[in-house]
Length: 295
Image (cartoon, rainbow, N blue to C red; front, top):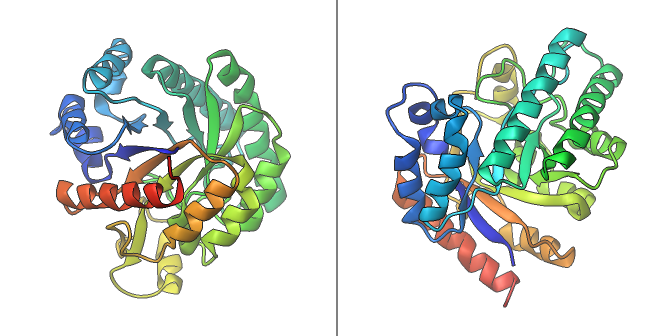
């Protein structure tokens, strides 16, 4: 049966920028929820001290929580080879962090969709860089998971492999048992595509999942695409909403995941309007898991 983890979507600035929230405080929030784990983020300020990594694992376990996944954002599509090598080294450092945290999974991405990089070049760069990290990940006991991503909080351009055809082509190029997919249905809508169609194409390779629901506070997806290139981070009109109140069809999602025998981690990206919103999202997913994965 799938397990639930939570991601501190509402507390990213507090944990990563201004330090107004400690890791221990975030773990206390997670402890109050009906979940088994927390998804870690590589950019937490307190991660800068490597000696903290093992301590965080113990802190989480003391609260009855696992750390199954590490979220990080390598950028493998830069045309400069030296830049890509630096990103490979960063990813290997994040793999080290994942291993010390006790995480089985570490995220990879393709990189930014730079206008001066062709489709063929971008696919080649991303596949080569990911493959360069896989043997190291295997030595560390960590699997790499690529997300059908939208855009990192600190990137100027959207994900190179945002669209379904590119994403599927990229994962088809990398055949390794330590490599799989972190499926995020909300991101597919932002690509103007059907998340159930994508899931059916990649479901046998899904190792983990992000659960969220997205909505636009104004405008259309076409307006969003005009804003998303050349500006850092998420577009201003884009919001995370309470799970179960957005566009995602979680019954169809869980039906397909059960069909392929999925029993991995589902990490919840929610709570931007407070911990009670996050709690309601946890309850929604817990009920859906009970419906579709009866014990």
